[in-house]
Length: 146
Image (cartoon, rainbow, N blue to C red; front, side, top):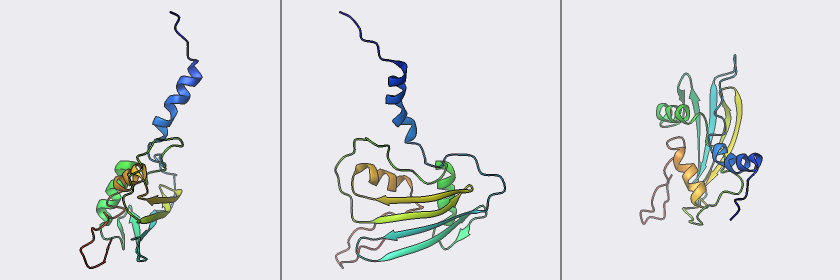
């Protein structure tokens, strides 16, 4: 039996998606950059929007968990980027909620979108907690509340 050889470039290309799954903006700060300011907008899926301003270094803004959210972003290296192209995701729908995070992080522009349309997207949303809120469970009143 003869073993087939895989060219090194093909092996590297196959391993690349694993490295791309890291946070989209995990890079050093730009010297002299303005402070980190993000606008977080959440649509609860029922037509209600919530908007928060999040400032980090120094921590502030209207986000209800600003300190925790900034600490989470620091651990992640910035907002979680999209799943790599071609990623296999479960087709488990987790809810109609959508969110955007826009602004700057470490001097670099941010324009990230999140939803809960499948397993990969739900995982991205969860990794961003508490920057993005945990979706509330229906309480029988028809109010989804985020």
